[in-house]
Length: 200
Image (cartoon, rainbow, N blue to C red):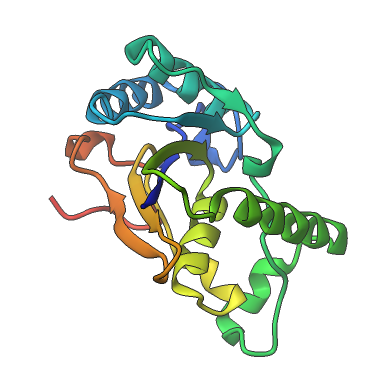
């Protein structure tokens, strides 16, 4: 039996282009949330969980409006965080990224992601479908976990606003990344949140 994790990054929030890490959804973010809800309409979700931060909470609310059978629940395991600190095998190019990050943030992020993996990277006795609405770093960490890649490898795994990533977990085989950063539900003008523009 398979445990499917549907990972969705929150919609674009107001002033995201100015570097703010959270906020209410922009008009584009609201449209993104509606479109990803329509994309997921046929999935029989067993659980829907979201980060308590504003952008993820509002994204979850839009999904609940479009998908009345779901009841999103906030989870602190899905907060935006710093999943790991610098390691000896990390490429030098990433060293500068940690300039403003405190040791306390790193320790808290490591503990949070350890608990999140323990919570959701578990096989199911019957097929199970869980939707997690969260943040770029959390999704990057889950993808890293699926590949059993080095800790630093969550960096450089970027997903767009309301992009869909699906991970399949089974008891007898390694986890599979079924799809990563799937944007099929978004027109080009709504593909925001990536460090580089998407080709048309």
